[in-house]
Image (cartoon, rainbow, N blue to C red; front, side, top):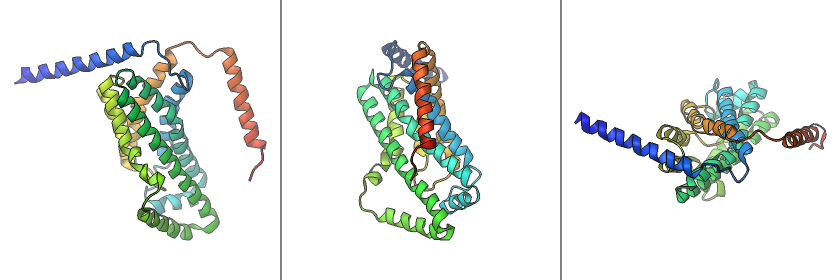
Length: 267
């Protein structure tokens, strides 16, 4: 029995290694066609890191809605930074998801298409939810904590009773899209078993207005870091550094953006 079990384990390991080798050969020399190697690598590394920073910054406060609003009234800069990092991290993830979907699609096109599309739809849903977070915080400044506590309770009741809304209908992909992408990554050999399971753990991350850091948040986002960051590092290493002209244009565009943000029209 022990020999048979050991043989099955060895066969499974060889099959996994063969899948990864076949996917690596199929992707050999391929670059992300859009948005390119550097943007994709920055997304694979920066997106998970920013989400984890947001998770850590708001971790001292209980995750339930009233405690998040109370934390904002006591530490507005910290909570604003936490939710902003969380939201920007998810916005930055779309090139990362697209890059992994391309790698999956080389050998398993349907898994790559469905996994990538479902997860990206889920990213839009989380961005929509951040809009309600942002509005709730600023209305707390104007209307006061007590009014907003009642207001958010009313919003949750109204959202629960809403028969149909585009982003309510797209809540499902925010959860199970990660599972589809993880299964596709494993079946295609784009990721190994361990990192595929880690990627699928993102389905445990809570979704909703003013949802703070829960215990499973660290597990979910930690799994995302484990799945995406090594892939981003490998992309950075797999090719020449950016040209001097590209670096100059990046500096110019960043400088223009900073100046327009600092001195542009407001209101």
